[in-house]
Image (cartoon, rainbow, N blue to C red):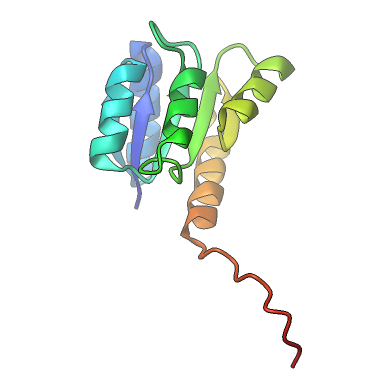
Length: 135
């Protein structure tokens, strides 16, 4: 299926996400901090990124903003993950450029449906601009 990069510093959360994604047929890349995740994203060009918001050093929102500013990684869908499900966090994740937002603990149906929707959207060709010609 897809190659998915998980950027998560909590070992238990990383293990759960890796298990869920593997069971869903996805190949998994792992990073425990934003800097490593940015390097992997640029080098390996995953199909999607699961980004923990609260990471040591650079947080996930700052890392997402950097990914979205870089033409090489801007099109990669990013799902923000957080244990603190608050409206303010969801709004901040949207401003940073995250394509979706999931609160922890991960629920596999929500995770799979969000991933499927974002991968389907990313696979669609950009819509053609109207030419003004009428049939």
